[in-house]
Length: 316
Image (cartoon, rainbow, N blue to C red; front, side, top):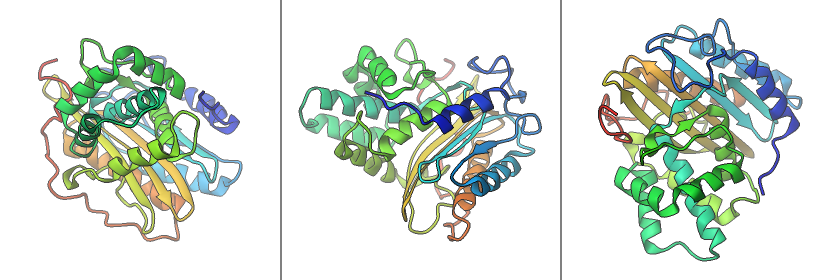
């Protein structure tokens, strides 16, 4: 059974909804045009926390500064369990998932195994590792079919991911996601809950910490020393030009437990999207941990710049 969202998070979501445009539920705005939902001058980052209002103010200001002047569209969501802190910029706007949906496929697989009261098979273990650590698309397709659409939909309902819509025609990379729902998913991995056992959660987090070096960009940027990152990224051009670049991350250690989601679209290049995400990530990490030194602010080497993650066939 899914836990109800805390009252603070629910209140914050309602507050940020007021900053969204009427078209926030659509899959995409006109290409290359910033909408009011993502224009920081019209919809500044909203951070709230009854436990740490000063931190909320600092992180909100940092996110706003990180997004200022960026082209394209962005959604940001942050949840800090220790401080009961929520931040959101356009958290209900929908995006093509690209490869970030592989984390959802993993969650649904783990729930399937739990429901069947068994251990994961050697095939499931191998496919899950390839899908997450290498972002292998063949493995993702096999597990998508193995879990099945009905069970995938059931997992979304059980997790409380009520604004996520599975891709049709086998195009799992065109699943529609929101920053809010991705935070809900990450919390199922990062915090004890009834949907996933601690063993299942820790397995998922371990895979997300073992992604190959060229995919360790995005939300891990600026992670403080002593805090462990767990990440899944997605990068997909549509119409052979306009990019969707996303990063979802969970962070733990030093008594911390927080999650960061940055979704972007209509950016001029993959590199530009990565830079936007990492600006936000550094701002959040430093805002939450001002006394801790962050890791290198340089993006990891070997990123496959301007090559699609292959989550959707060309021209689809």
